Image (tube, rainbow, N blue to C red; front, side):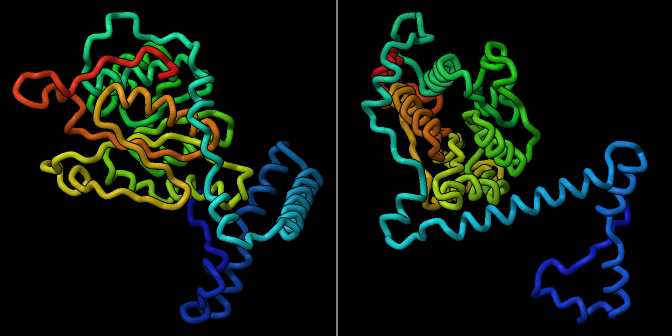
Length: 307
């Protein structure tokens, strides 16, 4: 398409008569790109005018029915009702434990203490093995992602671990689509500040439970880096502010054992329709020691799935 005419103002407040003549407004309204495409489709034998008219009427009726149904729904009349609709109910911890207690862990080696990053990769592998509807999407995640957290997962799980272009709006939009289609997405956002670029879709995902009165939640996990020293890369690698709208759960973990336990819980909440932001500390990913060479920051991986 080229040279498409803007037929109408963008909203009722767009006073076109302030910058267009009556003749220009009328001429723009007379140009209908959709009608032209319909004529071309009919001329090409793709469809018929009767079929297009029937589909138009069908969609119009669906819209009217949806508005009628919405008008009859109970109204939010209390604070408790408002809070209840911001997100899906929290899954009790014991239910999460009972659901995974007998599942096998991918960890077969000795329970030697490991750095946080190793436990993160292993915990993601564990969840990908257990949940066939789980997908992991991000930028360069097929090759390990940022800081090699997804190292080797694409080779094991194929396009369930998939690269997307460096476009956080598209990435968050795809996650919404995956969630609506019945998949369970984990979205990797490189750094906290990068989420600003996908802000509209991020807020859309979080507020969807409220907008749909709990009927169309967008359960997902949003994984991003934060809490680093903030000493390189300018604004996008330094800014650690987080968006915290109602309906969003936010968690962070300082060591590998807690991360593995936490991811099991977080993914279960996302599977139930909640939106969870999992914030990693870049500074801690490969930290080994608390003092000198004591190895105190490393932890054994919790192989008991009920842990």
